[in-house]
Amino acid sequence: MSNNFRHPEILEMTRKEGKVTVERLAEHFGVTLQTIRRDLSELAELGRVERVHGGAVLASGTINIGYEDRRQLNAEAKSAIARACASRIPNGISLFINIGTSTEAVAQELLQHRDLMVVTNNMNVANILAGNSNCEVIVTGGHLRRSDGGLVGNLAAETIRQFKFDLAVIGCSALDRDGDLLDFDIQEVSVSQTILRQSRKVFLVADHTKFSRSAPARIASLSDIDVYFTDHAVPAELSQACKSWNTEVVSGG
Image (tube, rainbow, N blue to C red; front, top):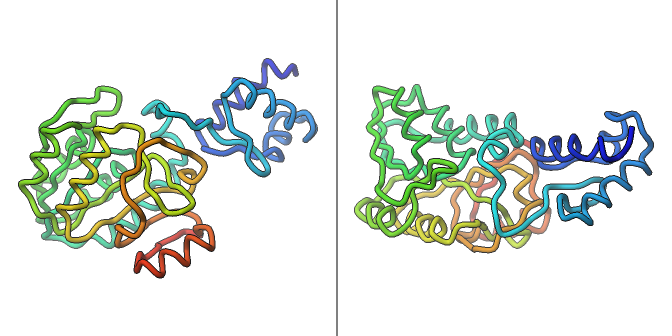
């Protein structure tokens, strides 16, 4: 099989899984490791992927990947993270849930919770929780980002400033090895920072692929997070930093 035929499928697998390994691709296509390494190098030269140890990840940049691709990316891990997060959310509290496919997975796990007041700037979260008759749902105003149903901008931030939440559940587009939470949209970053200021406790839901990506705008640090839910063990140095910050890490790894 020519590499021209392999490239689109390699890219599709990378979009869905976040990271692909040389070994898995070689087995999938029935070719040598050397052939796959050459394919990945060619895709990297085209700016479609970034080479990492043992494989490749989606190329970083200043623009996020599409919503549907993000929703499918590492979907099983996001569901497991969401279940762990939801198990720590008590009934009868005020809760903010922000934009992201991981936070939407958390909303899905809250359909049996009772007496929640949920404020969100995520139209998808609002639609999910409309299915829970024991949950009051308040949607912020703001500029509608049609690509993913997010509400951003000054009006969203102004609405959030009217509340003091017991708990916020947030996501991010990328995580730096030093513990910084990153995003692509400056308007969304401003809203996320307002959420942090208006919440007594903050949970972060972010799978391990966020360490394989980069984004240009800084939201906050893991030192500002109370509990970080993920699917793999975090790098040792960052794990030690989280302990010094009193940031609890709940990991599937």
